[in-house]
Length: 131
Image (cartoon, rainbow, N blue to C red; front, side, top):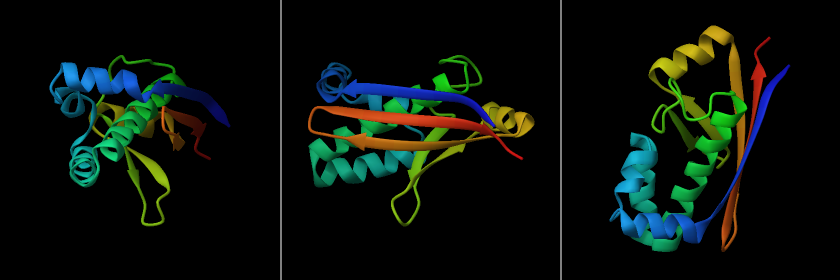
């Protein structure tokens, strides 16, 4: 059963301006530890791809927060959910702390899809009840 659907769009230039203004601290605030490692590696290879990665993860967190119906309120925090990739490249969500407890208690799981283009990124999350 579908519990909720979340969607988020983000202009990459908007995040680029925030990244510059915060001297990169926004990445540490938004990304979980595993995401941050990937971000640094991608940024080192290609700054634009690193920024696109940061944007897709931001959009995924926003979409997820909408899908679970909490917005950015506890137990939903920037670092309590991470979007990682399996070996085939498929994105998946992991949860930590109180958010992980909430997902387990409610018997919820979520699927995420991401896309990025030159100027915009998009994330869609579908939250379902486990059977």
